[in-house]
Length: 166
Image 1 (cartoon, rainbow, N blue to C red):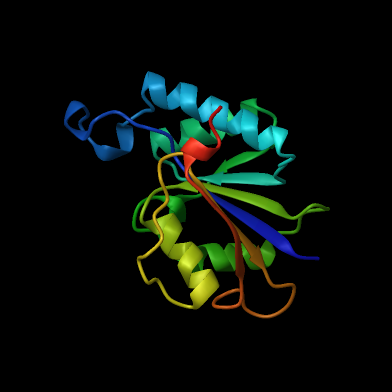
Image 2: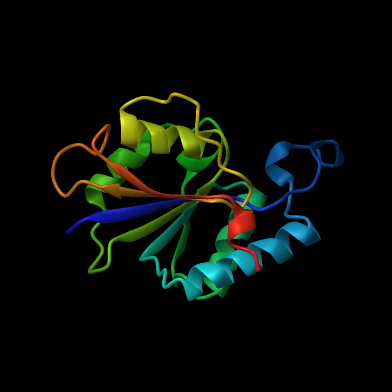
């Protein structure tokens, strides 16, 4: 059974200079509204995740909760390796133990450039830093059924948010 992973960047967040730390920056009103519209479109397209893993940062957590509120998944869990600078190897170790009953659709909500770099590592075996994941954009990667996903996965979706907004 194959696994599809959707890398979803957080929505538009507040300016860095307005917050004591980067981790505290929430979605803006516009970011919240656009992220809701994108989540609704993803639901219309038939997406449904077994689980949403999210960075612990406020803006990513808010984005994950919006996906959940739009019935894309009933489960959201914080996953510290999705914070900026997180290690893909920790996620790969977690992935080996993940046992969903069916579907095998996973959403990872985090940050640029990490999510794009992880998608590149899975697809090409290395981070080439050529993919750009816009705020509230989506990259879809299909992992192989057997063997290491590193360098053996296939990208099937790269969408900027403007193509998901009506």
